[in-house]
Length: 67
Image 1 (cartoon, rainbow, N blue to C red):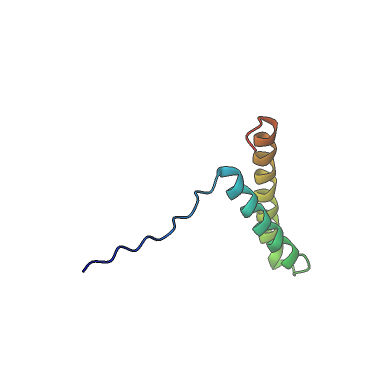
Image 2: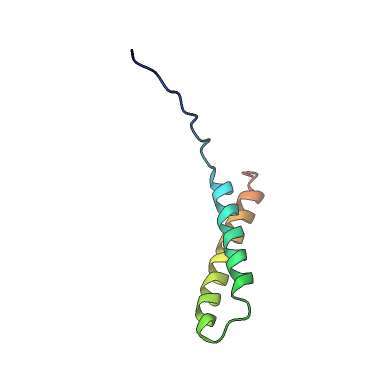
C-alpha cells in the first residue's frame, strides 16, 4: 500500500523580512569586526556600505507603506 506524507511548506519570506534579516546579519558582523586591525578596515567599510544600502531600502519601503 502507498503512504502519502504531507510535509509543511515554509511561508515565503517577503522582501522586507529578507532585508531585515540581512541587516541584522551585517550588524552582527560589524560588532564582531569592530576592533580588528587595518586588514579588516576594507571589510568593515564594505559592510558599512551594504548596511547603508539596506537601511535606505527599509526606509523607502517604510515611507511607501510597504512594511
